[in-house]
Length: 208
Image (cartoon, rainbow, N blue to C red):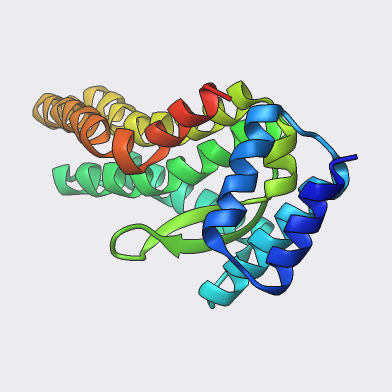
């Protein structure tokens, strides 16, 4: 079954053609092809290309551990240090850590796995999860979309969490500023993520 598709993938495996590869992925999504051999070939090619382009990676358990430790440290900073600056720093840290953790938790609940952590983003400093394409394409399009949206929700939740801590510490001005940051992040996500980020990917996957 799908022998022609498998043969095309084997050819791409030996002589990579990006346009042809992503065309096949789009076809797999559109036709909802769940053939294990097809998906394994896609995942292997995708992983090979990833290893060729990315030199520094962390395993998912190690990456998650670091993200959790940093998240806890940021929350302790917000709770324990009596400083407005500490609250702002905590919020900024959480915007970075809650994003991939939200992807990881949601993805695992929906059957989507990840292979590595690596640094990505415009400045190549954002901790990012590498998707396992076998499980990604096995999942329903709606589940893939939810996984992508979860990262945005994690980012947006960060200033709200710290704003609540600020209110608890009677730092109303900081809480107000963090709420403004929350609104600015919404605008930023709508302007950028809908074009090149998670919201764009979510919309794409929701259609498949």
